[in-house]
Structures are given as C-alpha cells and as structure tokens.
Length: 205
Image (cartoon, rainbow, N blue to C red; front, side):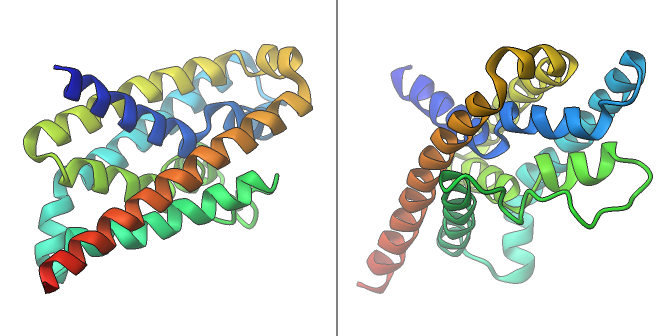
C-alpha cells in the first residue's frame, strides 16, 4: 500500500510541476481577463476537458504507439526526460519554456490553443503521462489518469479564482513558484534519463 501512495505522490508531483497550475493561472488571466466570469468558466472547463482527453489518449495508447513505431520504453524515458529537464531548466531560470509558450497562436478558440495545447498538454506533459502509464501496467494507467483528473480539477479551481490568486501571491510569488516547480521538473527529468539509460545498459549486458 505504501508503494501505491508513493507512486501516486510521484505522479502527482510530476504532473503538478510540469503543468504548474499557479503559473498557468497567470497565463489564463492574461488571456481571458477581459471576458465575463461566465465566459471564463466556460473557457476553463473546455480547456481542461480537452487537456484531460489528450492525456487520456496518450496514456491508453502509449504501448500501441510504441509497437507501431518500434519505440522502446527506455527511449521514451530518455527523450521524455530530456524534454522535461529542458522545461524545468527554463522555468528554473525564470523563463517560460518555448514548449509552454502561447505566442504565435492566433486561433480564435483560446480554450483549445494555446490553453489546452501546448500550455497544459504540451510535449512534456504527454511524455510524462506516457512514461508513468507505460511503466506500471494497468494499475499505472489507472493511477496516471486518476491523478491527472484530480490535477485538472485543481487547475480548474485555480483558473476560476485566477484574479484572487494573482492578487494574493503577486508576480514575485508566481516567479518563486515557477522556479521551485522548475527545480522539481529538472530533477524528475534527470531521473527519467538515468532510469532509461540504466535499462539500455542492462539490456546490452
């Protein structure tokens, strides 16, 4: 049971760090600050529903994608680890990673782009979901999807109260949270690479 709780906490921290609800709340406020409360709720709900189903699809189809393209779990862990590390590195230095950037998106439906993709369900989030779900069998998929659903709910609440949160912690608070999340992400990314490389070395021995 303790292993289950440990896995759930690890998955939660991984997703929480890469999705960074606090920093994304600021991005959400900047995108929809001029809209009514009802419109903000509608946009937030749509963005997070789309995000959830994108991650659900990659969590469920992860192994099928591996077989289709001849990808190994080790390759995903190494590549995903590098992606996650790069996102964390940018955040640690106080910059927004290009993987999370909303610039250059002129889509009329901001709930889908840039909010859902790439802000919430970016390459790093997808790689993290596939790594967690593929490494634990059926239980791994259930834990990954369940924990991500909880995080989507937390993010939704943050989005709804975005103006209150920003007023409470201020820009400096958001900067501190972003840097802390960046450090956690960089460590998680490094661990994913180490695990992947170790598995490759063992298979060659």
